[in-house]
Image 1 (cartoon, rainbow, N blue to C red):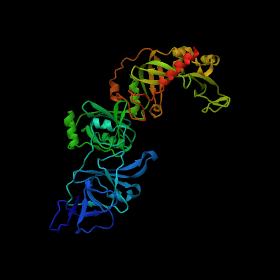
Image 2: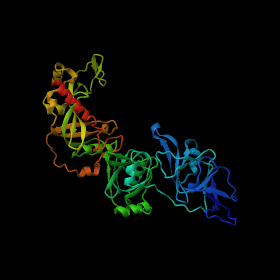
Image 3: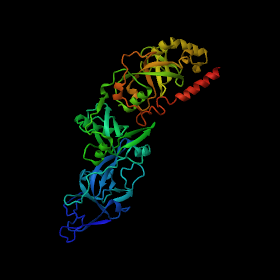
Image 4: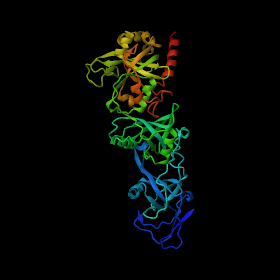
Length: 506
């Protein structure tokens, strides 16, 4: 469909007439008295044929390649035409500086001499099958007056059922509406910080997801919190990546994620009506910069969720966890030789043991416990690491003495009977969470104390409810507690290997 634009002196006026003053992105301005035809998005043709469109710039952002250290790829644009159709535009990196100054959110522009291509089948941000690519000859013109009537925005909102279908496929980056239930992150009122912020987000009645904000999105959201404006708890977020893990839904921000709180937006109005929410609902903010100092009773699932959904800058925190020992994992042995000077593990070089920290030939070594325990609390499993002091108290034996028995009982495959006898015991472990646990490759939790009973006066989970999500986190950080734990995914195979080893000795 081609629409005719005529000058104000033409006797026959098209309903799409642009009797306008035009601001040119290039040096040459068009003849204001010439008839200029333009197309709607639905009538565009593939290729570089002479085509023009008139549309509103509703959003744009810088696109970067996260696999190449954030290399700048270009500018992504969303354009909306008068028929309420949205199309994806793209300005390559080598042309971005030429066109950037002409991009203004909300402006109505005319584009000429561009390339029309098919959109990729992954990471779609519109429902249109084509995209507009800026080439060397492309011109952008801002329509100053008498522009066609075009809405100010349009969103690609998806609901829970649809998000479940899209999850883990990377087919679409949809928009989502929800109510903020709580916010957790480090240094929440510092909008210069870009570390992760986790939002507990109600997207339908009785359907809550965890929404992780990264990089610029995290910084922008901190700006809202810094302004201390919590008058609107219902927000519409754009261009998110849904993940389904362990049966639970998680959302991740992308480079195109923007936030909208305007209660007049139809999608927000509809959400408020459907769930009975109030746009001014107060929500809790937990700033983990100060750390969490209470010793709370938690499940293994809570620990996994805390690691998955807390910020990597969280300071040390202690939790109590009651679990049963399934087996002693022998993959990394049960002891190590420690430097008597600094207690660091000594390294073997040739026939000698050397401490890389002390770097002196005068140091000596002593055998100490380092035992990996496969534990289970009835719902979830993990690997707990117990060091010398607590293991000596638990077994009432010293590692150095047991090491002598190892030499006379088959070497490295030998597992002392006092360690074998731990299997089946239910104990209370005090877990020390450190910055190490917030790295993607962490696999264990360090035990600082072991008791047979819970000794704290108050182990209510009220505090945890404000800080720990009920289920897992983002793909790549840790598994959800209902799925195979990244902290204990070798437990099963190690337990089987342990049984085989015992049968072999018998």
